[in-house]
Length: 114
Image (tube, rainbow, N blue to C red; front, side, top):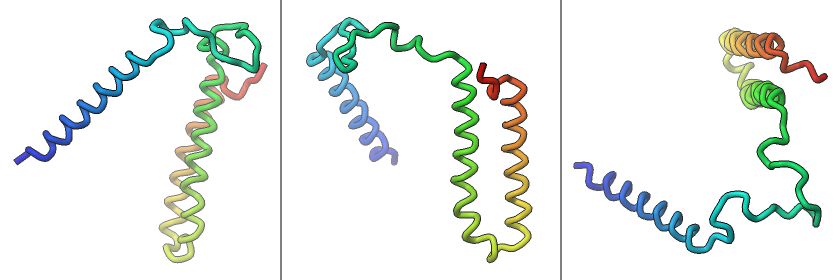
């Protein structure tokens, strides 16, 4: 009954295991960050994972909230005349959710740059 799904899962596991083993066999450095990244001939001055302050993650979440808003608004603007008042109410509910996200980000300090 589930032979097809089990077969696909087995194939996926074998592919992932094969890629993992190929990476282990062909990797230049066996330890992470043993070889330094190439940055236009300059040696790195700081660790690659420690260069961004945590406040930028809140700014990124705020950007994603507005990005998703635009992804929803473009198709909505095409069909709003066909759907009528229902579409307008739906958009105001959605914008209310985005506004709550912006208020949360403001309260958390994501909009403070200094």
